[in-house]
Image 1 (spheres, one colour):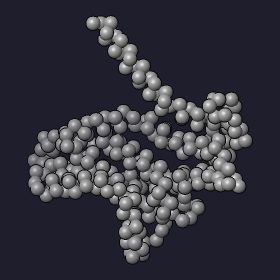
Image 2 (cartoon, one colour; image 1 turned 90 degrees about the vertical axis):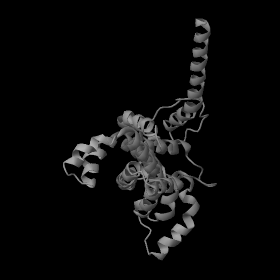
Image 3 (cartoon, rainbow, N blue to C red; image 1 turned 135 degrees about the vertical axis):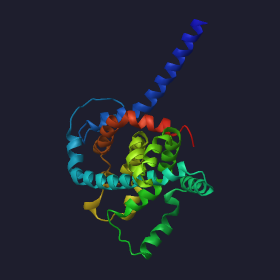
Image 4 (cartoon, rainbow, N blue to C red; image 1 turned 135 degrees about the horizontal axis):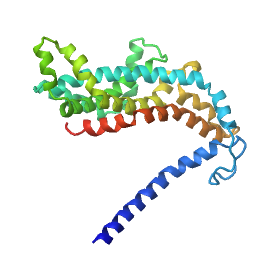
Length: 278
């Protein structure tokens, strides 16, 4: 019996190892290629046959990395802050009130999960044109907030129901604290795990989004990192320099990797605890 259990665990570990290798090997190939010079187009499967930072220097200069990084930080920061505030305030009454209206609003927000923003892009553009909203750096923020609210509200509602008991507010309520004061001083500080989960899940999507930025941002100096990488795509006359493109991809991913390294424990806790109850 013991031998069978050891064999089963060994088989499970072997399967996990194979899956990890299959998923990580393309990233290793891309990282190896990014450490080559731009004209070194030998077989990419041959790993680390050259180690140089010339492709990173070329990508840094051609994509105007500091400007693009600042634009991405502005777009992502404003959008995520607005999503956190709006979703938390919307989820609080839906989690606390036991009325038909709160259940309807909860289902209403959940309905937004099945309607992607790309599906209704044409009427959105027509509506913005009729309202004379200019296409600027801040226009995609409206769509980022709208598309992020359903999932974020779902996470906050589940977390408040499962991990923030009403008893923690009773003493403040007896002392005469109003609804907003109870929420901001008592409830909201307890939402740190799920807030970090919302920041990471929605922040990664907003940071990497190419579609909305391409539609609404028209000036090169306002382009975030995904749009700045367009310059590395070649054509028939000028083939794509894949080594430089891979280097640009890793430069764009580096800030998110650093952020996730600091917030990882909160991220895992927020997703698991917040999804216990609906």
